[in-house]
Length: 152
Image (cartoon, rainbow, N blue to C red; front, side, top):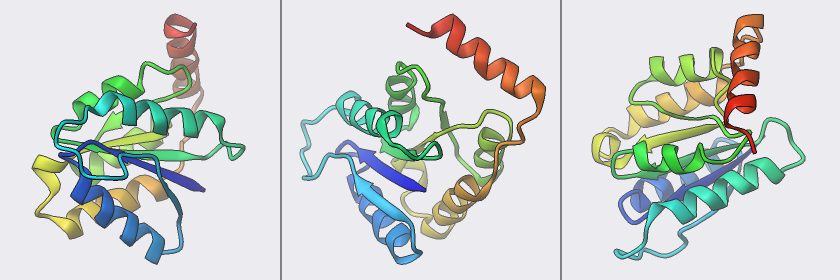
């Protein structure tokens, strides 16, 4: 599975910690930006870059992890793209449910809430990466409905 990471200036430090952690644990990781710390940058462009990478990847299980100050902005921006299911998770339970029920392919994190809790962040991310979509008919139906209602 390929994992694309994206962040604005507020998530820059946590993104780099995640990159190192994921690389050391054998994941294939690519930085989708921002590649330099720019206090004046804005999150929508990095959410777009990561979302397009996920959508364009040949691996149907490609995913992205986005980091900004609150996590919500990145998720909102990423969810503008049909086929992206971005979820904000503050703990391992939310991460698990986002995969199990919603087949989230983008995880959005709050650097303001999680930056000082590296072990908790790594546990949350590992839970998200290792939880498989349940495939339950009701969940598949709901995902199709999202694409139909909010698609192009």
